[in-house]
Image (cartoon, rainbow, N blue to C red; front, side, top):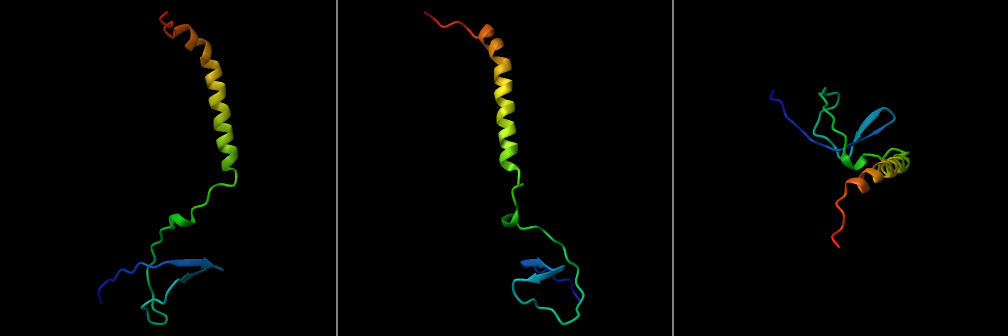
Amino acid sequence: MTNQLFTFEATYEGGVLKPAQPLPLNEQQRVTVTMQLSPTDAEWPADAAAVYQELAEDDKRLAATMWQSVQETWPPSAS
């Protein structure tokens, strides 16, 4: 018997993978499964907005800290 590769979509429910379409398998046939999570099912973390807010606050603090140094080293405007 030769190895055959099938790619199919499935949903995990109640501890069981449920294929979206019927598979070309015999009853009780054993298979080896390799899984790849669908990118469409990727979820943002519940606190994603808080993470971005924290990054924005960090950026504001960094800019405020650097402002004096920037003013001291920035070339004067030509008059």
